Length: 101
Figure 1: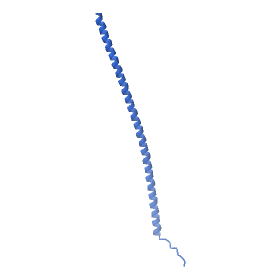
Figure 2 (figure 1 turned 180 degrees about the vertical axis):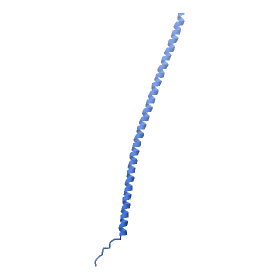
Figure 3 (figure 1 turned 120 degrees about the vertical axis):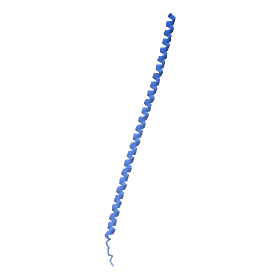
Figure 4 (figure 1 turned 30 degrees about the vertical axis):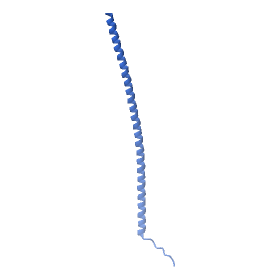
């Protein structure tokens, strides 16, 4: 008794081809999704870096404003001292002029 090899029907081979095509499409979609995920991660990292740079710049501006405020406060105090010295000098001159009369 000999076994006879029966060729598979073409429809089974076509179904396998369709399944293989679907597997390839699914793999391509998975790879595209992975690339998109990687691109999103790069964009997220760049955004975080930009946020940190902006925060550093904001802090530097705040420090500069604080230094300017301190400088202006010191200048104001110096101007008050000078004005007080002028007032004292005028009073002294007035007393001196009154004493001459």
